[in-house]
Amino acid sequence: MYDERLTAPPSWWLLPVASGLSIALILLRFGAVPGLIGLVVGGVAGAVALSSYGSARIRVVQGSLVAGKAKLPLDALGAAEPLDAAAAVAWRSVKADPRAFMLLRSYVRTALRVEVTDPADPTPYLYLSTRDPEALAAAIAKAKG
Image (cartoon, rainbow, N blue to C red):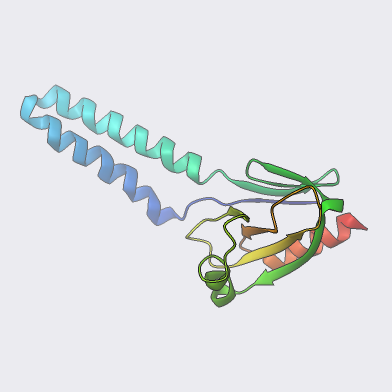
């Protein structure tokens, strides 16, 4: 079994604070109360958006690979190729296929590329941002038997 959550780095949590401050400054011209409401609403909205973005999970469970909203049976997957930082940049830019499924998080430098072997699926491969591509590849191989 493998389970990874692609949480946003701690420094990114300054963005909701900046969002709240920006909205507070905009609304401050209408008074202190609207400025305070803008601070709270802007901060909470930014935190919810960042939390949602950083809640993507990659799991290998019950014979399936679950990556974000995608769920594929392991028998529909081919070779898994761990990508270092340089190879990950290449596969999400110049080598990328527009038909590929990409669970991409810019703050995660490494990734795993998994071929899709199901002839009925037009997706050629999955590109999965992961902090430990070797462990994810091993979990897929182990689960496939």
